[in-house]
Structures are given as structure tokens and as C-alpha cells.
Image (cartoon, rainbow, N blue to C red; front, side, top):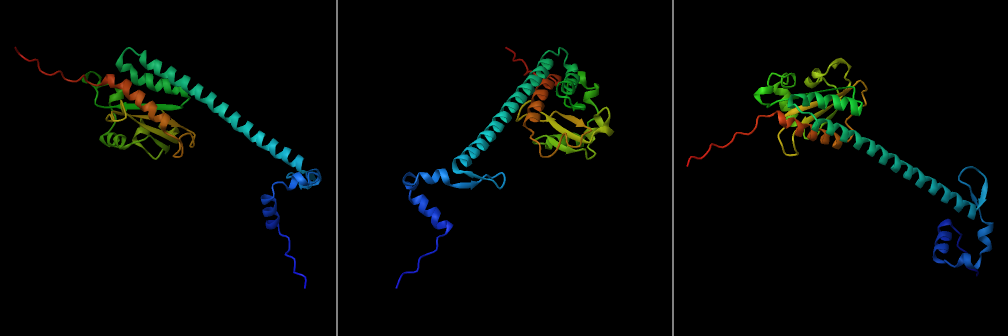
Length: 235
């Protein structure tokens, strides 16, 4: 009685080829005659053509990735240049009372932000009557201190939106706490605004905005009263 042959399956063929690496060395003519789907239509192509097509697709994908990396690098250079220009403007501001305007106008000009405003508190008595030192309620100060990272999202009627020149036009906001360093207390709040509801949104990264807040906060530390000197010791 002849044994019943097992049917040939795709799985069996794959196992055979994987376990018989010299098969195509012994049957090289098959490589030239095997016909495969092109992957881009119903036309059949040879194995070599299929491999070349896959390689072209892979190269095209790599080219796209490299082009994206180049664009990102160029964008980063542009952003770094704007940040340097803005920071230089702050360093060149002679009078401390002019710093808030320098910060706001620099951000609007360098980063194409439609509107910006800020308030600071805990300033020296010499600056207490300045516009930038008045108008932030206790609630606004508590809110600013509660922000571990900038808030980005819709204008939900925040008090800080009222500091803007055209508050009614602000559809999205970035609210940035102003501190002189990572562990320093919050001494102000910077608000950036746009009529575009998606300009500032909850899914965007905030690292760059945090750096802006630290730089602005460090510059504004010039407005605070100098620390009291210890009493002189008498001989």
C-alpha cells in the first residue's frame, strides 16, 4: 500500500526554503524565471525586478527621512538665531524699567506672535507704580505659581488674557510662569496669544516656552529690591 502523500502548503514551502539555503544555488535558473506581483498593479515581474523595486522604495523612504532631518536642522538654526537676537536685546536694555516692554516687543517681533503681555510682582518700590507691576490679582499670582510647565490651550477666560491689547482676539494662549531659574519662585506671568485657535494647544511641546520664561524671569530679576545687607559689626 502506497503511503498517502502530504499536501504541499505555503508554510511547508517556506520551511523548506529556510532550511535549505543552497536550494537556489543548485537551481539558479529559477531566480530568472520566477514571476512576482509588482506591488503596484497586476503586472508580473521577475524576482530581480521585485528586489530592485523594494530597494528603490527603501531608498526613497531614506531620502524622505534625510530631507526631513535637514529641514528640522534648518528650522532649529532659524529658531536659535531668533532666540539669540531676543536675548541680546534684553542684555542691551540699560534701564531695568524698560525690560518688560523689551521682552514683549522682542517676542512679538522675533517670533511673529500676534499679542503678548506680562505682569510682575515683588518688585522694588521704585517700580511699584509701573504698569507692568500693577493689575495682577492674588488669584492670578497663585495660578502662576501653580504652573509647573506653561499652559497652552484655549482662552478659557483667564485673567491674564485681559492684559492683552486686544483681549477679544485671543483664541489660544500660552501662559508662562516667570522665574529666574528652575527652582526659583514665580515672580510674574507672561501671556502669548493668537487669533488662531490651534497656534497654542495642549498637545504642543513646552520646553522652548519654558526656556523663554527662564530667560525673561532672569532678566526681570533686576526689578526686584536688592537683598538687605547684614548689619555692620562694631569693633
